[in-house]
Amino acid sequence: MEWLWIVAFILVVLGLLGLALPVLPGVPLLFGGLLMAAWIDDFARVGTMAMIVIGILALLAWIIDIVASLITTKSAGASRQALAGTVIGALVGILGGLPGIILGTVAGAAIGEILANRDPRRATKIGVAAGLGFVLALAFKLLFAALMLGIFAYAYFV
Image 1: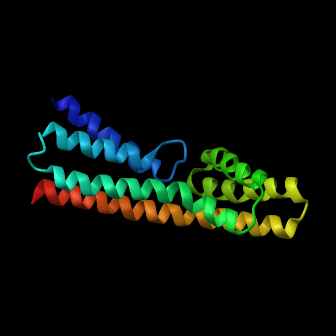
Image 2: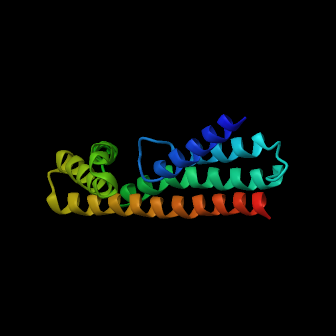
């Protein structure tokens, strides 16, 4: 059974890393690790109600993650190429860590918009909006992850 705790711990760590790395589904991994840890203990310390609340928080964080960047970029009037550039830029930016992801998101959106409309001023606006959306989504994911971990820890230790 100890190996199950190790797997749960690894899922939580990967989930925390995934909050900033677009390649890893951070919130689902975090929730999966917490759910597994509660299940290992037969939900004796962390009950069903606590896991339902954590699950709702995970769902909200996942929705915010998907929607925030798209809304900020689209509200700035981004083209489809800029939206695709946002994703491609974030993936390429992984090589540079968190700053690389943010800069990659901004650069990818701007390059996509330049390819679509050839307007550098508009491309700059779209790039900044994409970066803002990423940072905003990251802040909300961190907040929700902290709440999830806090609720789990409170239920487990108190």
